[in-house]
Structure formats: structure tokens, C-alpha cells
Length: 289
Image (tube, rainbow, N blue to C red):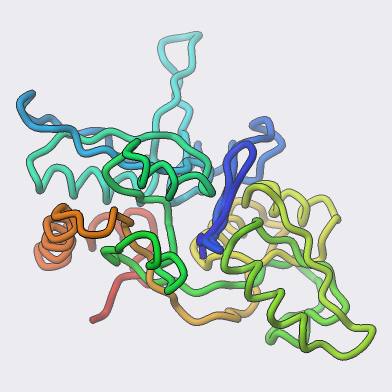
């Protein structure tokens, strides 16, 4: 999961954290055109000007979690606006707290330093809640998702890790996916290592698969599903890692954590979270506890 990720145009990395990036043109990126046109997202909420803005760091290169959607304005100009499941969830949290919401666009691998440096109040960027990250930040979990293989249609199946032996797999760098493959590669038979190609963003890693530089891509299940839906030449493979919590990250000891935790709990109870997840076809990633 996005422990993911990212770095240049954006990053990605569920992680080591998994996550993504913006970088190619609209025609070059796997989701830039198809998903932006196919998805709709809500806007910001109106709050009293006296309320302090709740600011989230996010890396908007990870559709359908967070990305820029291009809209036509009038007859000539184009307008970019943030969209995605994470954007809707953060907006709903801020509304519940009675605060306006704002987002800081920042590469995934820089989100935690930005949070700790006071550039935002929290991170929402499909970030996996891992023990390693908890050494720096605290989390309020709001989803759980596994990590899955993406393949070209007609390619040899990959139903287990051993099916990747001797194959080239693309991932976003500094993500939990990359860490998982590196750990597995340490135990491969001689001469059958997994060739891991790491990229600055999820977009770049999927682009590599589409253009034959890799024989498989490994990423968060929601992103793999979205990529397969957007590109009919791709197919979802096996889930190699079971669901991992995805959370909103906050500075350790911040009293805001309790407020956001209560907001997420209330959103599950009153159906707000269910509505958002259904809108983005993410109902299967809802927390069950």
C-alpha cells in the first residue's frame, strides 16, 4: 500500500509506504485521461470564517484515492480540481469538525517531514499504517486494503509469490510493496531472482508495465483495480498481501487525533463513509471492526 511512495513528479509508495506521482502528459499516464474523465468528486465545504482551516498534506497522483480532475470551463479554458476518495473523506472529516478544509500538494515521500515540520495538520494520502511509520506519526485508520498484482491480459498467471520468480516487476519506490518484494527476493532460488524496477510514482510504475518494461506491477488493490478498469489490456492478478490498515497520519500527541478518530467513527455510524466508499467503488475496503 501506499506506504507508498513517491518522489519526482509526485511520489508514491504505500508506501514503504506506497505511492505515486504526476509526471507524464495526459496521454502518457495510465489514469490521467481515463480516470479523470470517468470520476466525479465533491468540492469543499462552507464553514464559518472564524474556524481554523484543517489542512491535509496529500500527493494527488494516486487515482482514485487522490488526483487532479480536469474540467472544461466555458468553451476554452480547463480547470484542475482535486478529486478522489481520500479528498472526499478529508472534506467530510473537516465538515464534521466544523472547519474549512485545505490540501497541500506534496510528493508522498515528503509528506511525513512536511507534517512534522508544521506544513499541514494531517496527512491523507492512502498511507499504510505500519509499525515503522508509527515511530514518527500516529494514525487514525479509516480503510484497509491488500496489495495485488497487475498483469497484461494473456500473460502467465501470478497467483503466488513464486510465480514472480525470474520476472520483472515494477513498483513505486520507498513503498511497502517494494519492501515486500525485496524480502521475498532474498529467498528465491539461485538464478530465479525477482527483478524489481522501482519508480518515483505509481503512475510511472504502471506506465512501465503498459509499455513492456515490466511483466507485472505490484500495488494497492484499489489502484490495481482502477488501472485495470481504465485500460482493457490489463488484468488484476492475485492478492499477495492481505489487507493493511490505511490511516490519516498526525503528529504524535496531537489532540486533533482524538477529534478525527471520533469523526471517522461517526462517519461509519451515520452512513457518510459508506456513501463515499460506494461512490468510488471502495465498499470492500471499509473497516469491519
